[in-house]
Image 1 (cartoon, rainbow, N blue to C red):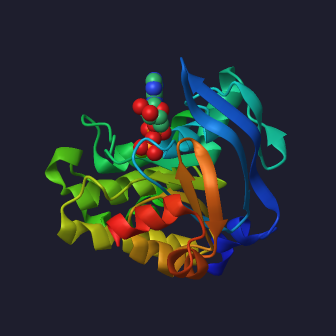
Image 2: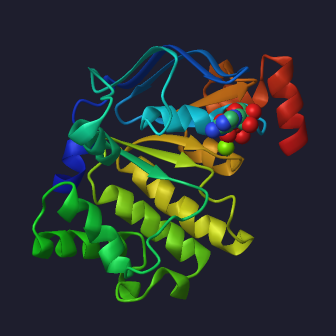
Amino acid sequence: MTAQEAAPVSAGRGEPLVVLSGVQKHFGQLHALKDIELTVKRGEVVVVIGPSGSGKSTLCRTINRLETIDEGTITLDGKDLPQEGKALAALRAEVGMVFQSFNLFAHKTILENVTLGPVKVRGVGKADAEKRARELLDRVGVGHQAAKYPAQLSGGQQQRVAIARALAMEPKVMLFDEPTSALDPEMIKEVLDVMVDLAQQGMTMIVVTHEMGFARTAADRVVFMADGAIVEENTPEEFFTHPSSDRAKDFLGKIL
Ligand code: ADP
Ligand code: MG
């Protein structure tokens, strides 16, 4: 990526970009998010870890409003999340999301997968969208696959296309929800390498992952969740060497 392309994401580095305050979320009787306070600054990489069912996915999903919240506020770049309509579609573009399952459009080519959003949502011209898509596909190492369909690619390649597709919308923040959990071991690194590169370019990222190597290398901060609450947050060095809560000690004992 050129310095010119990097400029928009690194501008204003360090200002609050995503702010959750007093966020409460219930699924029926289940208290899925408990009084969440979280500020992610522009350019920051926050890794969210915690046991299964602790609310990590729900947290991500509230940030691009795939889930509503019961109480509290979430702001992106100083503005409350929109509730509906065109503003909500614009929000989904500004908050790129990459899931465990690749979610590519099966009946569209790789190139079409990456150009569709910019053309339909951002109103970018087709030629410009294709040029940009090819650059992004090259950047994630799948440029030569542009004419193929998702099923013709490996899982690792599909996930890199999913990252390129989200980036094509020029998001302000990228959310990754266990992006490597469904991949065969030999494909994990190729996806993590793209994510590390993105982090180094200054992208603001919230990453749910059990890949502790990634957390140590790329995270500015680790947020540990249990039972719907943020139990502790710290730098990766501190968190991995001196977890303060019993829940975190117990969790790290199981995965490390
Ligand atoms: P994690 O990603 O940390 O594994 P989730 O955010 O997926 O956890 O889930 C947190 C809790 O909320 C779990 O108990 C889960 O079963 C529950 N949950 C998540 N989504 C829904 C839903 N749509 N309806 C009901 N319960 C849900
Ligand atoms: Mg999850």
